[in-house]
Length: 117
Length: 108
Image (cartoon, rainbow over all chains, first blue to last red; front, top):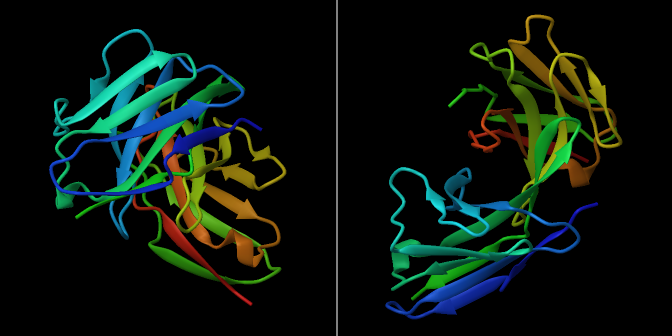
């Protein structure tokens, strides 16, 4: 089946630094990818839609200058958490869609656990 | 966003069938019903989806009520590896918006 990878799987950084997370579709192309954030014992929250060749679309309440998204190719989207602070510590997950029986089904990456000290 | 309602948690014995319910009374005619599950410390994985007819695949079956206001995910023979949070989602605008899901506990 389709595979989506994320790198790194976990990262620890100091407060004020920026962290880049990569999301790759390994055996298919994706003109859109999605970024989610998940806090402990909570559900996934959609942050933004990454669009290949154009600007990302952010959900309400998500700061676009804080969470920079770049969809440079049909297989790669990156999320950069700028000037990270402890409250940005979370599990970040990306997904990419594939058409299946007239519907897009999402394939999710394994997630990136970010800890900001 | 189209809303779904699921029980917070359920328990089942290993090797028995599990029926996970989902209510979606505000479903529109073009909304597909999707199920995903998330194992601990992993990204979610797709389970099954359907529109009106019941669906079967290697992972599960999806039974959709005739009025489409509810559906049931059926795991035919639960194993310990099926312990996860199961999300029932109405796919609208090709964006997956997650609710709280049902945490399924499997008892050995």
